Structures are given as structure tokens and as C-alpha cells.
Image 1 (tube, rainbow, N blue to C red):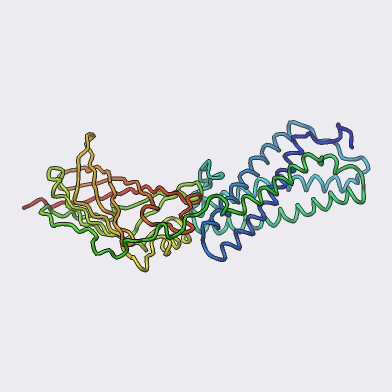
Image 2 (cartoon, rainbow, N blue to C red):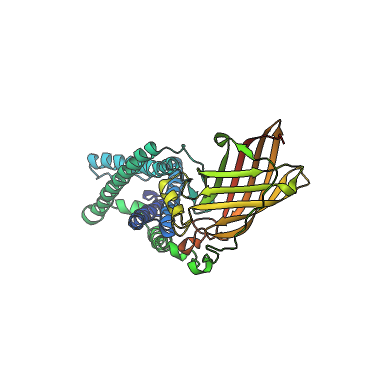
Length: 398
């Protein structure tokens, strides 16, 4: 065994082998994710990509800890018998490795932000977006991330090759500076457990079968209808109005909007019994910030837009609340099935203008949205928050 003074501290060795194992795990997750993506978007694919990001953030944090430890603790000297060019090469390689341990996860974080996917650390902590969503910038960052990954792979191979050279050929004790049985074993355990647990995303929880959420109300002839009302229709300003939603994917929230909808609104706070909401949403016209996510939402497991191109929200039952707001007790019709849904809203009135703002909390599983493998809420949350704003004018002439 090399003298204690000639070895790295146990903390430095533990960080070294843990980071090395996590980097190896990153390549495994990346390859599995690429293969899964080629087969189509699934919850398992999403899980692999999410775990890849989480491990990357872990590498970034540990690399920072290792750098701080390195500045606070002088590393052991290299053997005096080592040629000068090898000393220089070792220094260059270590600088490159440190740089890539920061640059690679940071570029991945930037890429995820530019692609419109917020990063979550193992579904526990959502991290802030570093930049805004930008498709062109995301493409550039994807290429950059790929180049950095290849560079790290090459330099790591050279680093490993040099280490074996010192063990097998030079036998100068260089490897013993960083290697010890406990720390090497710890690194191998991290790699083995991580590869087993993080790559098998189906292990997280057993998805509920599609049959459990089967749409038993499809094309039900008893779907609700609205009786006519004598209240005037609101003339909606579409440019100042919207229907938006917020969901959760891989532990991070995302926002979306329904781009095509119509609404027949008749409402007067003084005549609640005559109020009517009849909203129709084109389910294919969804913008959730990413083309792949939009495509998934249109699929048969989600909104099944080919069979059910329209969703409706029908209301003829309103109630004023003690705080001056209103509640609409309506029926949300998705995929041919009606589900009781409450919208809480305010109405600002000025002359003949009206501005309605409201929110509704929905369970996607209760609505048959995201069935089969997607019914597992590990990677896509159940709760969805819908926010609406309707700006309109009202002709109150009799």
C-alpha cells in the first residue's frame, strides 16, 4: 500500500469513483432512452430520459463538491520518475475532465429548458429553467450536448488507458493514489444499483390496465344538453381570451393551451338561474410546448382525437360564493363521457364589457385521459389545473 501521505483523501476517492460510476450510468440511460424513443413515446421512454437528467444534475453537484474539496486539499504528488510530458498530459486531461463534468450536465439542462421541458431531480425538486423555450436554440444545444458527450467518452477512455498503463507497465503506484477497495466497491455498487433501478422504469409502480379506465360512456345517448336562456350572448374577444392548462411531467410542471375553441356564454350575476355556458374545444388543437408531447396528447391513450375531435363543457347551474365569486357546476364531456366538473370564477363588469377569469382542478384519470401505461402517475401527474379567461362585450338592449 502506498504511504498515506501519497494517496488522495478518502472523500476525494469516494467522489471520484461515485462520479465515474454515475457517468457510466449516464451512457447506459442515454442508449436505452434512444432505443426506446425510436420505438415511440411511452411512459417508460419518459422515465429513462427523466432519470438521465436527474443523474446528470447529481454529477454536476458532485463535481462541484469535488472541485471545492480539490482546492481545499492539496493532491498527493506524482512519482518523480514520471516523464515531464506525462505530467503535462495528466494535468491537461484532468482539466478537460473537470470542465466536461460541468459543461455536459449544464448543456443538458440548457437543452431541456430550450426544448420546453423543465428539469426535475428524481421527481423531488423542480429546477428553474435556465433559458426560455426556443426550438432553434434547442437544436444547437442538442448538437453541443452530443459533441461534449463524445469528447468525455474519448477522454475518459484515455484516462482509463493511462491508469492501466501505470498499473501493468510502469507499476509506479499512481493508481494507488486514487484507488482503494472500499471506494472502488462503492463506485461499482452505485453503477450496478443505478443501472438496475433507474433503467427499469417499469419497476416504479405497476401501471393500471387500460380496461380499468375503459370509456364505458362513449357515444352515450344520454349526454347532457342545455335548455335555452333569454340572457344575451357574450360577444367574445378571442385575442384577449384563452383556455390554458398546467400539468406535471417527470416531476416538473408544464403549461399548455387549447388553440381552437368556441363558447356560447350567457351569464348575469343577478339572474344566475338563467346562466348558460356551452364551450366546445377542438382536442387536436393543443399546444403543450413540444411537438412530441402534443402528438402524445392526441393519441388514442389520451384524447383520441380521431374518434373524439371535440370536448365540451356544459353548465346551467351556478352559485355565488361568500367571497363574491361564482361556482359553475357543469359537465365536462371528453371522449364521449360526461364528468361533473366545477369551475370557480370571477366576472369583472364595466359598462357593456365582461371579463371572466376562472380555474378548475381536474383528475386526468377520472376523465379517461392517459390510460394504459400512462395511468402510472410516476412520470405524468394526475392533477391538471385549467385556467380560463374570457373577455367579451354584451348587448344588454332588450
